[in-house]
Image (cartoon, rainbow, N blue to C red):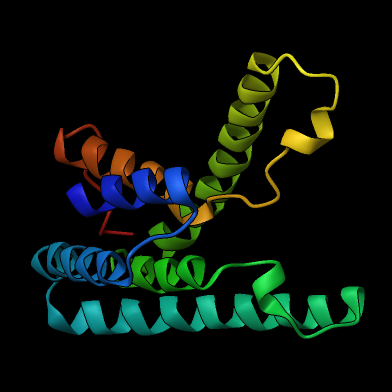
Length: 164
């Protein structure tokens, strides 16, 4: 939980996260997952989830190549975001992972729009376009979302996180 909150803080503040925080997050999520379902199910879930993340990235690369006429994934998605997606892939059952990832992306979009509107409304300048952030701290927003998911699970409000 602490590593997820540290990822959120660093990504929000600097748009840069220490690589070892992703490793700590992946290890923590893996331990929780293994304790919930055992080694065999953990291996199956992690393999499927990692395959889904890889497939998602390949589709994104294809889209970038066709739409933007370039092969630069760095312009669309940061390396930290990719590391974080693979870290998340180790932490949940496949159906839960896919469902939570979709809702995490929606949460990230909404929270970014809210933060962007809040920061733009606080600045009283005529040139608003100069103050717009060009990057989205996706790993940070997703880490905040998944920290909330884990908190809800630990408080006992949702017990089926690793069953489905």
